[in-house]
Length: 470
Image (tube, rainbow, N blue to C red; front, side):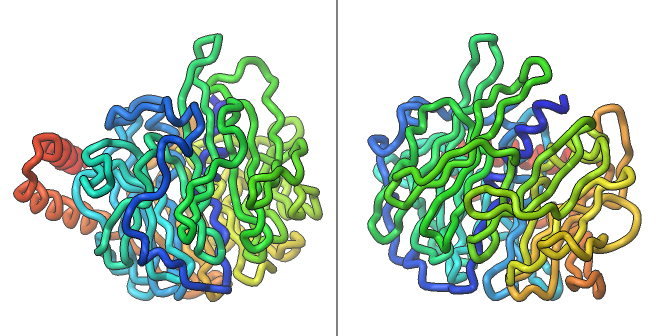
């Protein structure tokens, strides 16, 4: 179980990594009306990918794990955006985007209906929100009714909703460039190895809003999984960590990741073996906050790398057994909370979830590793920290009730959204999960009355049954 969870960490990275810049410029997204890209722009693997309208088994597990929370602050720091978690190992359904007032933590439903939405991101100018969804494409998209996982965009109040792409069946993540002119997209295609195991192949694309182009980075058919992808050097370069990946690795050996850096024209600048599996770029795009496991007992290791992947200093060296498969840390992987590492806006400090003395907690330290401290002391499990744009606050999630078992942690309560000052004071907590469920039920009841398509009616009714089971 532990070895394949290395992959969970990798896949959560491609959604958790986001490079935000203080230099906010106009995205121009408001002028985008029709979808960008065609099948001809895709790799052969992505062209052959299929979408049956539902994810099950290992596929559902990976998608759900990669995006169980994914909180993001608006550029002005006034709103927190997240996709409400709903964990089910057998189905992938009915996940909506919510916005929380950063001061009062009052929730507001942003997307509606029975479709699945995930990977919500603010445009750098704060005018738009993008997300990936399986909602049917409109007739105006030229492929009306076709189901797939495509990128959508809307105004911050949920209005003016339209697809940015229509050619994907298997889009997995989307990250804005710091200037807001482009998005870095990742796909995920499933296959079968010679031994019968499930393989994953990721594709990498750049969506240029101004030029209205979709360009593939690399071949997209080399049977490697992109573990972590990000913008570097202010958006002038693209970096990603990749490795061959099979769902059930055999034996003790595991593949060595490779860090590859591309120029925006698609030319490869460098490619070299990398001891780290996950990397989060600093706001200035000059350094990487990276996570790996080292030595006997799989010790968790967090370090600062330069933009070429060379280690500069260690921030945190975990104790033996602090890696995946070691109790509480396993559930963090399964719920997509790792590798939620985050930089302060001035790139001087970092926050991350780590396992210490049998507990998983959020820690804060200077980027040189000094001043390490637990953000908030207390019982329970804390995870998924994200720094506010002004650097004054940190949000994270807290599980007040959990129990250890043979495979990790069994959660026994809804997570709490928590916002605190960066020094750990002035804690504010949202615990109104029942209120959110009630609002979603009310929204689905309204959609059911308005639905005319039999498929829509079926999906809405299934989602209402899900809520009743909750």
